[in-house]
Length: 363
Ligand SMILES: Cc1ncc(COP(=O)(O)O)c(C=O)c1O
Image 1 (cartoon, rainbow, N blue to C red):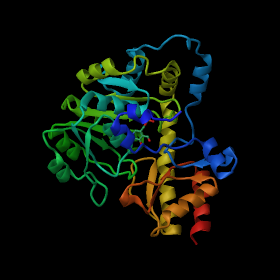
Image 2: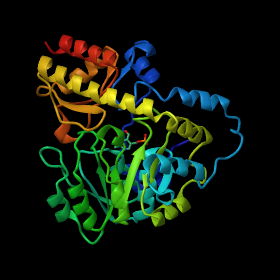
Image 3: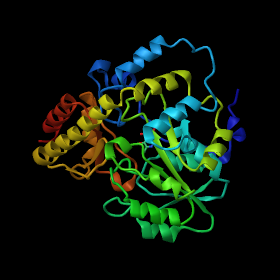
Image 4: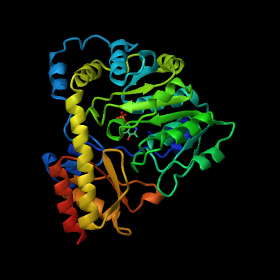
């Protein structure tokens, strides 16, 4: 049989450069020929402490898995409203922040509409917007990787409907201040402020939702709450946008295990936020050792990760050699990031293993 199925696929999908996802530990271990328990995962900003212990208890005790979840997410939204202090009609949950990125794009972008991508940034924005047939205009961040407000203003045309502002930005860790977010909101397009790392940064613009109907704030439980594998995120926005998204999402997008995990998580926020503080401290301890002992420079970061610049041309080899030792870090295709590796904050033992491995590799 000759495989001629490409003729049935949308031409723009044939041309699309897909998002490069992170692999799970068992796949990484097999690739490098090491034991899965020897993998130190510092490549996806996951939480090395895992979820609250209450999550496993709640999942084990629950008995309603044979019944579909509430399509209107009533209890889930009420729980998120209580956690955030935002009125429930302004909150909607998604299967990860990723699903909400896709839903917002689906809600706003017609083929040919323009959207801005503030590069380097989280890769899913551009992929999702291109999938919708949008014309994605790159607006490079400035030298310190801050959002370049004047360049954004200059790039906006009557066809510009959407821009994503990752805040703090993944992978650079950079924070855009509220005054700049306000300026962006005043330009008119939907501004999605992705606050996936909110609990680490302690910063939000969610209160501006009362003032601007073109603001969408996204959050995730993947990082601070250790639920990356469960897939749970939420958005804060004007009730009208909540209603539209409610109308286009998959009816049962928050699975019963995900909602059970959420309720248990929100019973244990003190412990989880204590772990967040430990990861922030560990990020800075790691920075100190990278900079003082190894001469590596790291950008200031408000996330649970550091973007670190290695000596000229050495980053790919260092990444590969670390992987051979079971330590996984992330590198990006962006032309400005060739010499950089992004390293997630881990447990103290992870940092120590990383620094020891780098000392072997770099001297
Ligand atoms: C900035 C940013 N937004 C969204 C996501 C996706 O989050 P989720 O796991 O909730 O889909 C990530 C994950 O790394 C991220 O870094």
